[in-house]
Image (cartoon, rainbow, N blue to C red; front, side, top):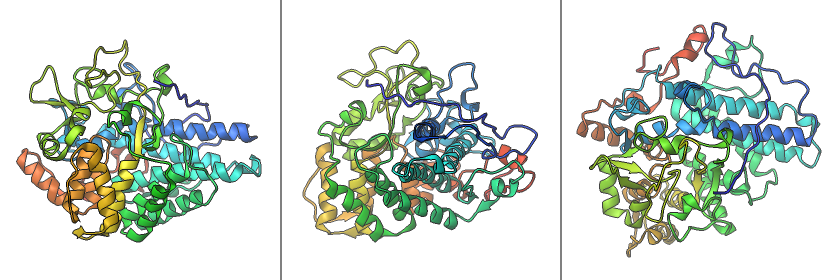
Length: 477
């Protein structure tokens, strides 16, 4: 596995919300740094490191660690849906599996604080661009604003109204740090950041940093979320027409031939040192890593794969060798053989180097179909059918069709992108989350309630806000 080290710098003593004083995450001043392009680019790398998240090992806090970044995202993206479960009530995700997420749930706090850490690091860079060269300043700004927008996009989709912090702030500015802003204004802010980044002159070459293709793809998903279907279609057709991206012939290569032609934006990890490695892939296994088996496939997902998965099933899940009838995720496993099986665990399976793919070309093609559907129930557009069948042909499931329906598209996204943290947000974006999750919950003796389409605001944050930060409806403080 290639080493793609993202260098980390010590920019600050990071103050987390866990003490007696209400000190906002963004209330830190960084002096004597960001004096030139080299130091500013180091600051850019630090934003990526925040997105990458720390990889806590035994003895350093585990899921209490406040900066796990995207390493914790599978719990809300997959386990909080009809796609995934824990093996047998693993503490890493069980609250999400049974729809009993509380303001005290560790992952709720970890993810919230991780996203604001990204935002803080982006704001620090943005406030020091006067020291950048005239040539590089707009490119640095574009990259920082793209990453800030992505963090806010995650926050607003999972938590709803959230505080809008568009600059570094002082300890006394608690109103800014803790006042929730209407999500429409958050989306306006996201669109402004992404549109600036899109027009900045960034090229389309990178797979693990901001690029024109990554910006267009994330911006298109924002527009789909807002119902701006024509805007999304134009962006996605630009990505397709660029011919920079293509579907990998072998589905397995998407995840083990890193920075491949299908990757639009991925988060790089490295298996040579802990600071740049990841541990989430090991948590997907039984008794390997921090957990004891989580992000297992539900019976309903296995049935979907049996129905329309084609070749993708064998590269997405496997029956747990020690627990017949239970199915482990095999995407992103730390060691793999030709049969998609773990041959032997590394000395420390938490130190894995598999990149995390935020979005890839198959997602682009399926979003293109979604944009053409434009909220409708079906389309006979030849462009939609072409994009839809391209994904299915790779899976070996294509057949002659004269239309694509909304249900067909949701089903296809489910099996193509399983375990890649799309399912919960897809259900919300398609407007079927309450219906689907209610039926799934009833069939599995869980207790889903409509208010759980938003995560709770962390109780620790509410506590230190001294009454400023409010809770989402349905949850206790």
